[in-house]
Length: 358
Ligand code: IPM
Ligand code: MG
Image 1 (spheres, protein in one colour):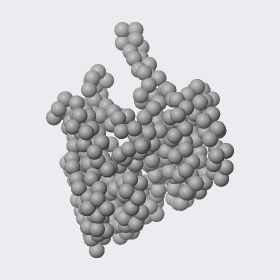
Image 2 (cartoon, rainbow, N blue to C red):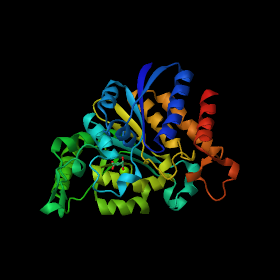
Image 3 (cartoon, rainbow, N blue to C red):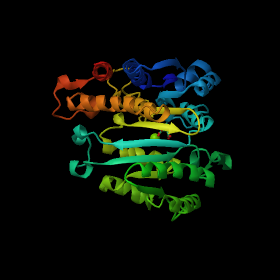
Image 4 (cartoon, rainbow, N blue to C red):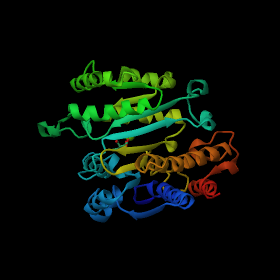
């Protein structure tokens, strides 16, 4: 199979982890006889520094031409405490999502058994947890009208959804539930918000078409509580952009570390595959970032964008085997991990590559 992949490292540890992700792609190409070609492009803070724009036209053009995008992270601490900044790295990410029509963000939360003790949640609560989140990604308060009024002393953001936006993500979630444990939980705040009442109406209207899937509705506050109390009760979860953003960071603790979680953003065109973690400037350049979320993002790309199931499985198995062998990056090490088993970014990448090249 011939595929063209655009690598967009972005900011902070993005470059370190996508370097490993790309090596894994190449190892898979060699092993299975595929021909992958690559290009690179700028986004976020590095793009602002180089061009003045967080999403330069050149990047967008390359994105549209690619078969899939391996994405790192965006963000820089200098903007976080400067609410007055007009141009921000995150604008590049949001604009990319909109321009590429990436309305569905899939965030699988699966705990590797070996990492049971890396989580701060009790092992007996966690064991067997396996959740697939569908976070809507191109609507909601992220893209609604926002404004300052009253000489800057008042501000508002609009939480807004249209029926078709809810329908298309909810359908994707139902389809996925069918291939899993046939349970779908829709999360909203329909006891307060009108946009959530529309959301719930749409889910209720579609549900009869998927009579084999058991549907429940939870309010966001209750869902946040249940996720920690009893993660196993969830199979597929579908929710809006903001609720999904918050809930999936929380859910990352079920998988032991943010450093383990991959995500796929898909719509009708090119898919984007990226860790759910951010740019992590506190550890940038130290060589300690966990590359496994980027490696697992590659597995999602192979599976979802290219339909290469065996190849995707080979990547996930390699991650599993390396964890079984006892290797850890700092973020997933436990107090009992022997120091020689705590690896940096490149050494962890090497372990994965060795298995794929065997
Ligand atoms: C995410 C991130 C982004 C979001 C930020 C960086 C804008 O937190 O992908 O979850 O809020 O969507
Ligand atoms: Mg987030």
